[in-house]
Length: 394
Image (cartoon, rainbow, N blue to C red; front, side, top):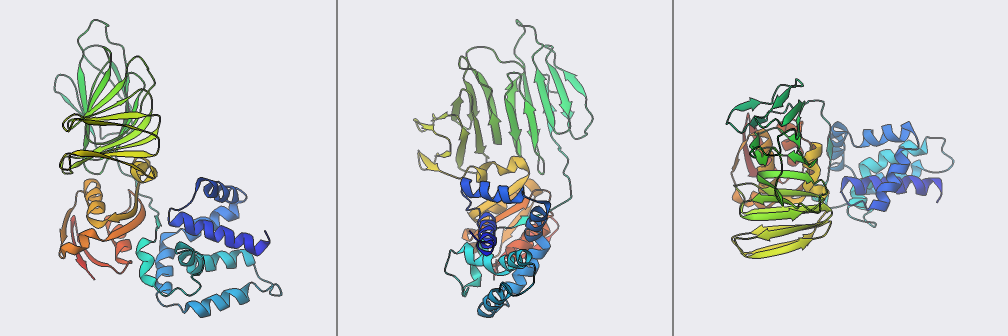
């Protein structure tokens, strides 16, 4: 592969990453290029920069793509003493990315409206503080908002180590003591992490709650979930780990998976990252065994379990502080944003609820900036008034 082909190949990889279409092999190829030099890394982040994307978007709605491609070709003539590397990637950001998003062959890019499926990285320097609270066995409540490292102790002797954004349980309880239960509740705009006494790690999303014993006893390890959580279950073949949620039980031995079961949604969604899980929907009398990369959707209204292959990153990115959407209904996107930002959303035209969008946003980004990106698709108008959002069709 010659130099120019290599630069165009990197442009294609960046375009595919923006559109979340990279294969594992392509991601490795792009990562290798990023690790080659600091210049590569700086240029990559420059291309993915939000402010530049907004400028590119305006250019793309004005640009004559035929003339642009001609300029691109003349720029890379071998007799021109220019920095080919930077020039190619600059054109990749303005011209090649929309070309490659739609596949090879779109040298004349006529349908700019396809930008509704453009994926963008939004940068933010703001930090959110966890606002969780812990409810102890006696009903007393501990505010976990402040970040001081303070140790707590339950009545059975269980030690609770408290750190910024996380709790860790250590089983110091008397073997004969009564099993006590704690609950961690997460409000809008916060995530939280805890480590149970068996070593299982749980990441809780906003507006979620987990009830769990301070020590596990008996033949199973059981917890009760409302909302959404990502589990990294400690292996123990003799004691299966059970997640009970709205009439559905997820049984695992040692695995990583995500469960989403908010009370305002009809579905219970289990997404398996690694290992295996068994989903038992007792209320409809059905069960299924999942493999990594599969998802089970329990729908009480339809009376069944839908199993499908999915991109697990789309369902687990929240624990990394990212909103990640791909061809998702606007109403479903806004439901997720509402849980984080505590919003009230009004749709002036009901038809817009079913419009589909993609995006990649930092969860610490201002809601005004996120909604601005949706407006750039030229499909909707958005008005943000504090925590109230009005959405209408273009």
